Image (tube, rainbow, N blue to C red):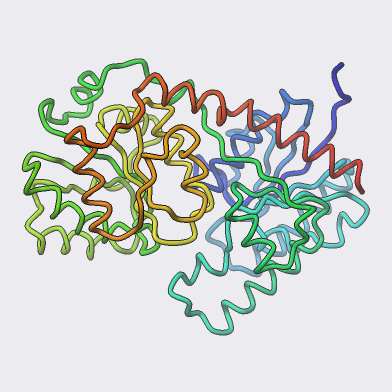
Length: 385
C-alpha cells in the first residue's frame, strides 16, 4: 500500500552543475530521485539564477556562491521565509550547517532531518589549526544539529563522530549510504574501448584516483607508493584527477621521485567523462588519511565495473568490505598502499570482477535504493515530531 506524499524543503550548499563536490552530488541526487519515493522537493542553495532552470524549477539560489558571507546568510533567511510563506513543508532537510543556521526559527513547528555529510570545521582545518574560527564553526554546527529530529549519516564512523563531537543522541542517528547513478557509470564499453576514447595506452597497467587535491586525501602517500610499484611494474601509469591547492606541490613530488612517466595529474575531469576514466583503469585507489565519511568515488568505481583499493579510514571499509575485504588495505601510509597496488596488479591479491562490482553497486547504492531509505527517515521524523 503506497504512503501519502509528503513535502520537503532541502537546504543545500551549491548546485552540483555549478560547483561539483560530494555533498552537492548527493543533494542533486536526492532532488532528482525523492519525488519517485513520494517526497516532493523544493530546495535552496548558493548559486546563480540558472539553478532554477537547471533543477527543473525545484531549486532556487538565495545568493551567489561568491557573494560576501553576510549577503549569503541574509539571503538564506529571506529565501527560507519566502518558501515557508508559499507553503509550510512537512519536513525540512538540511545539508550544510552554515546555510541552515539562518533558517533556525523560521520552521520552528516543522520536523527537521540533518544530513551530516561531514564535520565542516574539521574539514576546513584538517591540520587542527583555525583557532577561534574553527571553534566558531563547531559551535555553529552544534547549534544546527541539536535542532534535528533525526540525523542521517553515511556510515557508522560518521555516526560515532556526530555523537561524540556534537553530542547528538545515538537513538536519533540513522545510517543511509551515499548513492550513485549506476546506469550513468555502467558504460557498457570494454576497458580497451574506454582507453581508446581517452587516448590512454592500451598495454600498460593503469590506476585511477579522483580526489580533491588537499592533504587529507592522502595523495602524497599515493605518489610515494608509486615509487614502490615502479620497480616491479615499470610501465604502470597512475592518473590523479581533480583540482586543489596542492597541485604544484604534488607535481614537484612526482618530479622529485622520478615518476614523470608513471604519475600524471589530469586536473578537472568533466562529469560525463568520469565513468570512462574509471572503466579504463585496472584499479582505482582511495588513499584517504582522515575525515572520510563514505567516499562516493568508491561506489562510482564499482558501478563502472572497476575494483577499488582503500585505506582503512572512516567509512571507506564499510562501503567496500561487504563485497570483498581484500579491497581494504591493512593500514594507511605509502608502503601499505604501494605493496597493495603491486599485489593486485601482479595477481597476488584477488579482487572482485567487473560483474560483481556492478551488481554490488546496483543492489546497495543505486539512487532509487538510497532515496527510498532517505524517504523512510523523513517519514519517521514526521511521525516522531
